[in-house]
Length: 181
Image 1 (cartoon, rainbow, N blue to C red):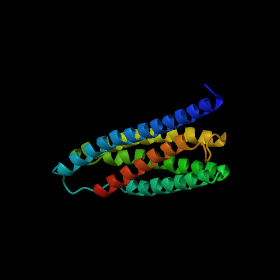
Image 2: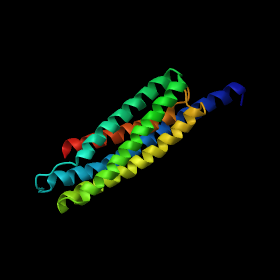
Image 3: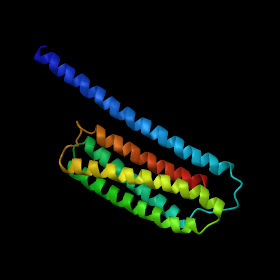
Image 4: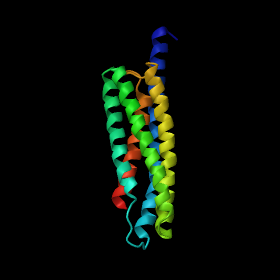
C-alpha cells in the first residue's frame, strides 16, 4: 500500500469514526426522548388535580437557557479557533448547568411535600432528568478539559459538538417539561 493510499484510508476511517460518534449521540438522544415521552404521556393521561410546577423549577429553566446560550457561543468560537473564548464560554455554561442542577435538586423538597399523584409523576421525571444532567455535566467537564489542552478546535470539534448537542437536548426536555406541566 502506498503512502497516499494509507493517508486516504486514515481519512476514511476518521470519517467513519466521526459518523459513528454522531450516530451514537443521536441514538442516546432518541432513547432518552422515549423515556421522557413516556413520562409526558403518563402525565397527560392522569386525572390530576390542578397543580403547579415548583417556582424553583421555573427559575431553573432560565439557568438552563443561559447555559445553552453560553454553549452555543462556545461552539461559535470553536469554529473560529478562538479557543480562549471557547474555554470561558464553556466554563460559564458549566457553572450555569451546575446551578441548574442544584435548583432541580432543591425543587425535590417541594415535590416531596406535594400531592401524592403529582409527586409520583413529577418526581420520577425530575430524577431521571437529574441523572441525565449529571451525565451531561460530566461530559461537559471532559470537553472543558479538552478545550483547555487545545484538543478541541475547528478541525477537531466532533466530540465537543456531540456533547453540546446532548446538552441542548436536555435543555429542550426541561423546557417541554415546564411547558406541559
